Image (tube, rainbow, N blue to C red):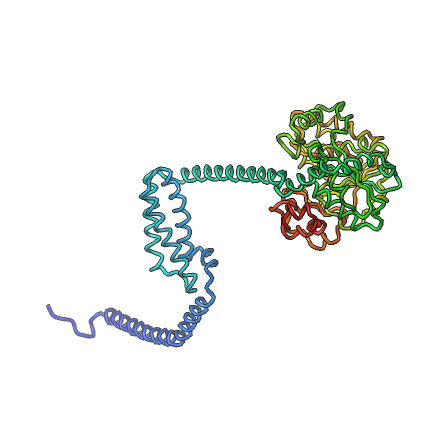
Length: 524
């Protein structure tokens, strides 16, 4: 077949090849331009980026904080700590299932992790992947193995809950035991005080003049003179009572106008009487009586008081199973009008207080027809009525406000005329009878006091009576200095070795350590 002449060939194929070549040329040119531009752009910015990375690393190294590392969800330290926490739980469970091999392997890796964290903290540098990976991998494998033993999450939670419950019980038991030991220590008589009492009792029997002076002093007119300032104490601790009397008269302008009425038990009566007859306390009068002289107590309508009297006469002691609750001397504070029937006003002092100011102005405080003046203790919620009384009992909840403010025994002014009018002692008997099963309150004299004197209290300025020196190490020194009376309430009494040392000098300054009986028995 003849070929066509060139002018007669189809022109479309030539046009197509032309456009393909043009497209390829443009593409190559564009690629070269883009390559050049990108290369130039990276060259311009690379030094800056590298400098920034180096700077960041330097800053990170300088300001590394392991605590922040542990809180960071992306840090290896955090991952390691989380694995160790989970591993510790599995150690407990493995030991409970007697899988000691697994427990040992887990413990080994936990120690390795702790060592790595310590090293990171010392060098101030973050843990790297290379350092953390072996330990994390080993822990992960061991935890996986533990799960094969069916130590799953629910088992862990159950086990940990049982451990928490057991620990709580142990803490509670330890707290109760500590409280009981502290109470026993507080109520026990140190050998030094026992020696002191024996020496005074021996002197009573040797010296007939002391016995005669005791009889002669029972009917002094001063004992019933309402123009004088009367104080009452109930104690079996001769030295503590001496400190109360001595500190009171030492800070008084007219101590010869002070009369102290001390009631003690039969065992300590001779020692107490001998001490106050043989020593002068700046001209004040001190009357000492024995509980055996309070014959009217034998006809008390309260079974609770009858029990206390019976226990004292049978055993020669004033305490039953609970010294704080079942002490006849402690409960005599509810019988002050019967003990001092001719007096109109009296200040009650506990034997663990120290007087620092003249208490004469206390007798002039207006009680507004109330029976008792006391410092309230409700600056903290703990000292509200609901903390002392059982408000789940309808007898309590129907008559009293659970948010009512508590107050303190230990330094109180009593209007005995108002007391007799309100018949407070009968109210005390009523509440003791209601609490025969100990369902209203557990122990102590404060709870029945709150009930018997309810609505009959006049709040005093807190500077009259500062409490807590027998348990609180953090009392403000300025508050102690401004206090008229400081109270060593609590188990750390100032005459015990466990006393808080920073407060002890407040008590010891009123003891004459040069006195023969004190020098021979009590080491300063």
